[in-house]
Length: 460
Image (tube, rainbow, N blue to C red; front, side, top):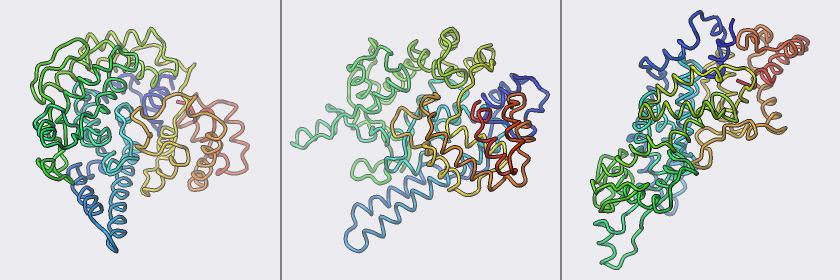
């Protein structure tokens, strides 16, 4: 088997399953085919409820919780917590079942990559109840289209609007802001969180050439980007519960200038026009292409490859398919000299695929990733999870991986030949050194522990 087959499965994919390395088609064609065909998510993902339904449920419970007192209060708190936790676990189980079973692992890896680029963190209520739905609704449909469409879908999703506090950001000179000022009431005011992260993380990058004035102008342009009704009061109760709602009454009127370009007041379309221009800006192209090369090629992205992909981005107006195709054609992407160290997420997914196991216990994956420090959809900041070995290495991290490998081996090891499994999922990347030590193990359980914890399996 060729080295390209192994790299296609274990670097661009999510880890080989037994039999995956035996495919006869050209590995690049196999990866490209995953981008060109419509792909339905797995049945567990398709069965999930939609964001409006979930938000209507949990926001109603949250409102009851805030209004409750006395003996009823603890019961309502428990009901709210159970509902949020139930949705979070259901979405986590669906995500990892889809990753374990998919025949389009490159496409699925792109879903995970972009969900981390547009990170929402489930440590802020009610985001835990809809973080997985954000991935399925805003990210999944757009991973092979234009970056502009992906960007707009991510910024308009209720999870992002709630996480970065834009749903009730009020323009100082908007209808509501002006009315509050005339009545002597405190204006909740403009919130810059989402605008700042759009510029710093989602598009231009921290060195992308924007100013604080650009942050303010973008924040003003996206005032009114809000959510319909669920859990809101007064004028914020308008609209279909749990869906994107543009509220003209809180939109800051007037033209806005971002990166030297003037955008006339056009309500919702003003913010959309700015995002479309940001999507094709040279700084955005370089920032995002650097992240793509870091993820798929090396922790220290080769500058020449970043330059080529940036040119492809700009020459194709941010069409992601063209960028992926050039990445797959790049010789730097197919070298085995600088393999990536797996994040805990990658390690767990590749283990599931190697053992051909679809998790049916919602606690299995969450507990594993809790142990190794990468709890699903909980990066703790809008920057998302890191993507370099320096962030995931270290003695404590390795010990926890060994600990989890041992627990998995005790479940599956007695009926698994670890040497044969290493050959099946690692191919020629399975070193003679590792093979020797695993073959000398006292039992299959110990041998499987050694395989999963080996340097060969820990890298992709």
